[in-house]
Length: 375
Image 1 (tube, one colour):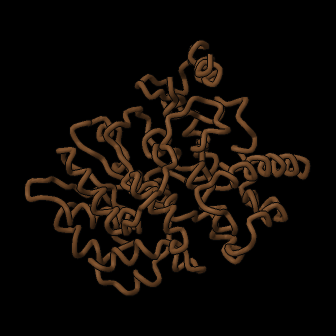
Image 2 (image 1 turned 45 degrees about the vertical axis):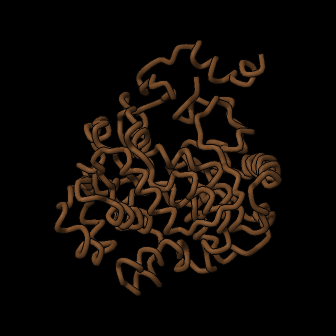
């Protein structure tokens, strides 16, 4: 009875350390892929061994696209104009046959982010959609179409959460414990409706963070030396599952996930991320995801994009433009309290919405997995 998705408020016994890590990397549903601190019996992508792996980023991209075409169904790609989905678009176009069907799902924001790609590869295929039509349940529930997102790309490369502390990227990772609460957890905000962290709570949260990080540093697949290493590891280990499923479970109201796939959620991309950790970031925000930008530039010659393109919150732009009013903390609380929003999804397909009562025997079994597995 493994869990595919859960709302964090279900976990009254959730390890406070994993909660703290989730706040740093902005994971709504933090999941420990080393399976040390999970409170539920989670379905997650295992972190892989890397023996004899030497594929390039381009090879990983092309093979991921070929595997998707092997599914034998039309593909609908969510293209934001950002680095991750643009790389996915190139790979899918380069590997498709004349009989394969590729639809590109995008908005005016996508055009604005990468106008040259739109001009050369997109505009003659599909028209842009209004933001309100991007994330519709009918599409997710149509399993005759494979939906592809650019998700898990950030987790392969590191974290845009590092941006505000980029000047510290080469510092020793343990120096994070000398930072202020705003620097670690990002609680500095003008939105007074977001609960603030007092000094006592900060000390407890920092201690919980230390407990979980020191254990995970020892079992990470690379040696964690710097702040950049640390942020990559927290994203790679704890945020992967949240990102892989958020477009459906967090931003829509359907529980049908099986035909929506993250382009970068492959074994090869995971191994590439571990083996090529040293080339993901050149010390400036402009060099973040440089291997992906070099790959894109091979097919779309745009030196400005190759040199200066930086990570943008593409999904958030769509969400902001899809609602009436301001996309703020109050709006997000209202969306999560919607009785139709998804609260718990099991790997076998069973699910419960916010307005549903979850049977106690279900909660007991998913919370006592360790006892049951060793009984």
